[in-house]
Image 1 (cartoon, rainbow, N blue to C red):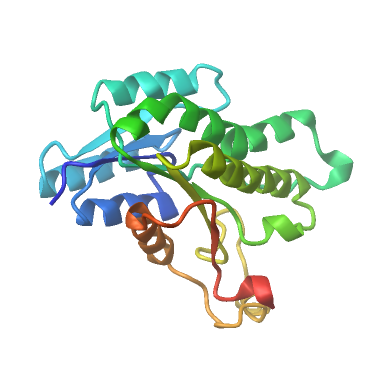
Image 2 (cartoon, rainbow, N blue to C red):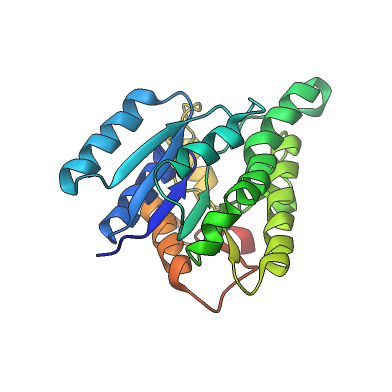
Length: 243
């Protein structure tokens, strides 16, 4: 059991939800952010606090709001003054074919995928310094090589990987900064894929199957204590990036 705190963005659903629960299983106290999934966030908070009282806290913020990072910093400060782990997981994801792409979409995708991770790390740096913590960013295995019709999203995630490596140099040796780059872990919520479409996508994955959110959370837990790893982007994609 530990009294260490982790702060995670986008913790109410999917990979974020699993990561919160996994770190809680490891004895961490959890603070996680959500945007619009209030009911799901409250369910997770209730579940984890029933397991261990006063071990889970939730904070709401919309990253398109310019005050969101300051609001989260103040919210965390009311709970703790040190962090062992910061996981920048929140992400916007949708297609933006070039002919119809807009500045508004670019700003939205950059806000969640690159701008917020950078400036949230800045805002929480004193907490991480005191807790001798680390930063874990969540990228995308296909972003560096480009994704058709997703140029804005791929650009934002590629920026995040550059930020990860740059901050690893800048914040060393006190703070380690790494990224996890998932492949097909869960099918997209907004796509109703047929079994045939799923087979086509999985044919590009050497391991031949979709991943599990715990495949990502287990790497995050590992990185939280891997004291000689920094500046790395670890692909967890069933081999998709080499096919």
